[in-house]
Length: 497
Image (tube, rainbow, N blue to C red; front, side, top):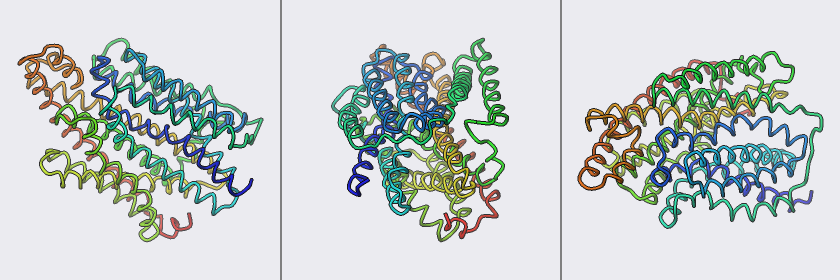
């Protein structure tokens, strides 16, 4: 391929990748607006947010295999078309159920786009140095896209309705689809590779049922549906795991977990991505519901967190060459835990400088942790299993985001209900989440509605602080586990990768 065309192909696939990563974070800032507009419950809001990542995580590997068989350009174009149709459906959703379904279809489209983009880059750039540069540019787009999501959402909601955060994808796709059609070669790697869609369906079903069980128990207690999901979800996941061990062609190579560094790396990817996604979601709600900020003001307030996370990876790569994986990985997790403890103990508006500094520290440490997890995984995987290791890493990253949002949301809502019962006198008066309380307060109006808003704000603030302490403790424990598990890893090992 002519040199100029290679870089044009890179521009096309990076533009195709941008809406996927922006959609991971742009919706966080729109939660208060869509909650009121659609009358969504706290549980429905969590499904709206995390169904995207859960579906994508389960389908990434089989969609990559399908792209090997059918051609990267073809699957990329199909994924972009699905993503565009689902964006329109999401923008004009008239109920929480319709929006959840649209977000699930968005996850299907994204699962076709992501592996195809990486495959096109790897096959287009045959020179190792050029490929490294291209992948570096791709990673910057990914980090920058996730970083600008909340700000872009704030800007859109300042002038348009909540559906605009989805509809903004359409102009981008209108440009990207013709570029991909014209510039990207239709490469087919293997027409005989086995498509493991059945195993992927098991994974998605097990995850969705398990997450549903957790949310249902926290919301309604031990109902028949919750108990059934608690039994069925883990059972399906156990069947999936058994297939990965016994099948000659497993979807995920679980044998890689035998290496401690890979296990630690995947755990770090899971925890770091989950903590970042969960904290962003809860922070966006507190800034708007409790502190009364507009979506744009909230997006600007969150910039230190997301921008620091974007630069954490490159900085972590530099530090690892000097200090080694073990120190950077363990201290990045320890720094994130300290930032969470500090944020839990202050009011966000006590000092703008202190709050911004702590949020930047949290984002920086989590960004470094994600880079460290990637090096731990890929640096410890045998060369012949690099693809399998990459699939595990991607799945762990997406699962972390989805499960992190679930755990943060469920904990905050549960603690909120407990606190609002004490403050307002009845759990029902404050609803099952602050979003429900604000919707109810708007319907009641007057002094009674304002009293409900005040009670809900106080309860949510207490719940948010408690969740940050709990999460900080979990990450502090992980930091110690990382330090012990990577004791045989040296700086030279990292430099070689």
